[in-house]
Image 1 (spheres, one colour):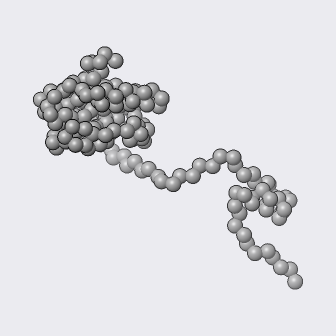
Image 2 (image 1 turned 180 degrees about the horizontal axis):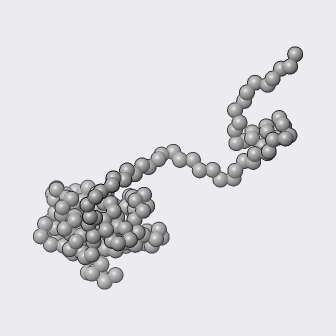
Image 3 (image 1 turned 180 degrees about the vertical axis):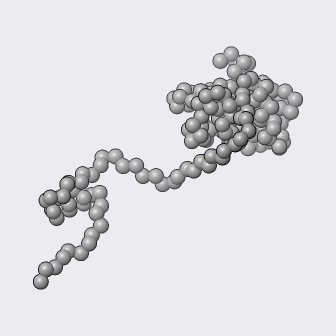
Length: 177
């Protein structure tokens, strides 16, 4: 009586040995040295829009855009604008909502979205509920970290704008970078 072996699933470890020993006419499958395994997927939904995109050509444009999307000025909000090659806002994100005098920001959170949206450059901004446009030491440190991360990724940080209800300050113009 002809007995067949029971089916055993092929794994990466057993592939080269099992296939070569079972049938010598089959091509040998080799174990790959590098294998990508994604635990979590990221999904980006693109919506088609028929209206003109908002173009950023000055810090005043950034301030106007940020004021239009922020409804709560009692806490700091850190916003990133993701721009295409024509400096139009392709996407934006409220990266962090903090307290009355701080909003924690990580370059990972800012640039993860920039890569997903295919941004060529970004502009970051945050509001100061105190109505003062004077940048704090932390504001300058975050800007430096974001600029350095952007250089590594090839996504330029064009400006960091501090916005209040009635004024704004471009850190690029203020610090001369």
